[in-house]
Image (cartoon, rainbow, N blue to C red; front, side):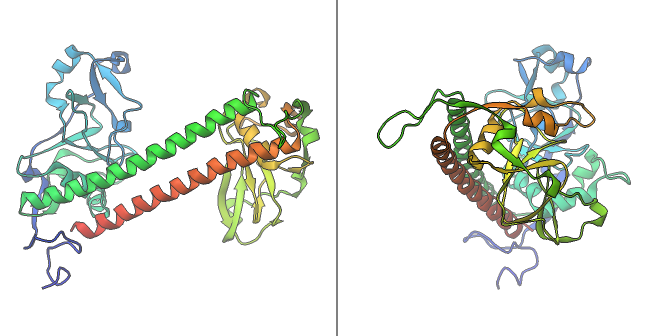
Amino acid sequence: MSNTQKKNVPELRFPGFEGEWEEKKLGDLTTKIGSGKTPKGGSENYTNKGIPFLRSQNIRNGKLNLNDLVYISKDIDDEMKNSRTYYGDVLLNITGASIGRTAINSIVEIHANLNQHVCIIRLKKEYYYNFFGQYLLSRKGKRKIFLAQSGGSREGLNFKEIANLKIFTPTIFEEQQKIGKFFSKLDRQIELEEQKLELLQQQKKGYMQKIFTQELRFKDENGEEYPEWENKFIKDIFIFENNRRKPITSSLREKGLYPYYGATGIIDYVKDYLFNNEERLLIGEDGAKWGQFETSSFIANGQYWVNNHAHVVKSNDHNLFFMNYYLNFKELRAFVTGNAPAKLTHANLCNINLKIPCLTEQDKVSALLKSIDNKMNNQMNRIELLKERKKELLQKMFI
């Protein structure tokens, strides 16, 4: 009999395992379901070393995010013994906007502690922790968490609701383990690809830092230096086309195929376009980010619409891509006025003064940074394909 003809078996299964899975309440599979609390005094008790203290922002989809990790003292940890979490615990966010986010406690060297927004699910020894951690990441698991939430506004999970979650599980530990370890390897592969992307991003930042401070200069085909960079105002670098942009109130937008750009990039898709195969640089006017290495500008091409929150410029004998990289490297917040919202006015933008190389050197800079962007895009596509593959497998390998 095929798996699809049996009632309680997954669509996709490792060879060598047979029989139906059993439906059990999560509470019957665990030795602990519970959470902690915020220490008296709150964040005043957080330190830079000591016992790791996990909060909801540390629980991501499948793994711990330790970039924003805080610590508590051993004395406070001793007062909160009941909420200690150990390697292999399944951690589940149970309140707020991040409800349902799940991770496996991967801190090996020491136990951690946690606050009231994170629930510890500690499995009995005969159940493999990552089988259940991965199940909660699947669409099936997420739906059960959603349906179990208490309150009309669905804002929280209590321990009883978690204990009552019904989960189909293999009767043989080895099958649970094989599934859990399979997804661990897939997660590790995704993590390694993400690390490669991060290295490319750091490489790009490093090049931009050296290029735009002129620590790194290009040479011509004869090995000669290009001319010194010249001071120019933005008004002399670009031709402004702000008169062509046009906002459409969200309620009046007709959905379509054409990108609708605002201050930070594409914010919608509409049925018509204002620009037809005209490559332009868009620079955030209000509601944008203007810090160094933030996306204060971006290239638009093809057929698209632009609202009145982004300046529209075309080249005046300058490389648009070079200028885009330069503006995203540049700290522009000093030129921004107001705060409700903050705005980079046309007048202030025009009066920004930059040191600009000759066009040939601009082209070489642009080509180098574009090549890194292409590698980054390929890497992002690779990561996205792996994540999509994992989603499909989660759907097929659990009931």
